[in-house]
Length: 423
Ligand code: NAD
Image 1 (cartoon, rainbow, N blue to C red):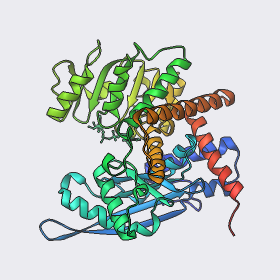
Image 2 (image 1 turned 45 degrees about the vertical axis):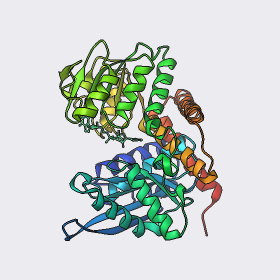
Image 3 (image 1 turned 60 degrees about the horizontal axis):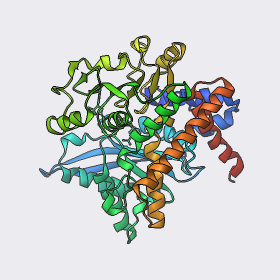
Image 4 (image 1 turned 90 degrees about the horizontal axis):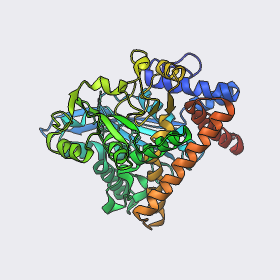
């Protein structure tokens, strides 16, 4: 971490943003510097070399990391990211966000994250399997069902989670499904995990609209990103009677003011690989989705897309953050001044980690729940977390983002206080 004498700033934008959010919550809570430093400092970090024998025989070495930002409320929980830009500071930032996210939705977890600086598109499945197994064996001493539980993130999915679980289990000597979540259903994955994040987004969007005296049915929605989160969110919004007028992906965007046929769009993307070329809508510029004349905007692609350059042009009155960190701090201030309600990432996209928690509970009990049980429990947790954050925001005159951070940070600080400092 590049810091002054205290770990409160970083040259890495993602980490600096996370540290800035923590500093804001600490200031509101009136904590002294000792607690601030405890909360800003990751508990454990491991950096490993991940040598890969390529399919052509030569060896290439990648860098892998695992950071447990905080484990005061339970084991570390967080994804494994494969992306060329992964570095230790980005992993530290994402691990910190996981700590607050798990706390705000009251899961018995701390926050963790892992990553390898590899581009999965450049490698065969066999190479990715060797990388995943080597990384897992390098970080074995740190992970486990009661220590640190991995899940998919950008560039990884249920295939990688199956390899992590197998490598861990083979080394321990018996099958331990609870060491990862987001596994295939056939080896202990949970029903509803694939759509959980999107379903959670629609729950909190509905709660925010209802709070404002509006309804999801008939509301106009734009979605940036048409992957695991965005495509499922568009589908569920549409099923709930919302009119999804704009959708984009990395290659382009489509628009239909009468409402896109999401089923047909999904079929098109399955065949063509992108929303581009969809005939039952007009092709539009990807950036225009963020400033579309809609009620609800769901950024569900990458970070830092709502910035000082476009925040004043946003016409949606509700921004529900599906992606992690889609709004820069400057844009957050501008949108707030313009009266836009932002449901922050640590609350809005927590549906995924909630159903990951259900998967872990089911694996620990070896007793599997039905789709209806998962959906009911997810709805209950998302809606009660939203209500708690909205009440706190109202009572203390805070934005939903500050209220969510304050609740999350306070829960973690309380755990530290109650447990005391060893020795
Ligand atoms: P994904 O890889 O499945 O989909 C990403 C989508 O975004 C793709 O359609 C891609 O084409 C599109 N995209 C990329 N760059 C874009 C750009 N510049 N403009 C428009 N679209 C662009 O990823 P995902 O799992 O859907 O995750 C999306 C975001 O949600 C990430 O920020 C991720 O960290 C966050 N998130 C995901 C989960 C989950 O359960 N998958 C949970 C919490 C948060």
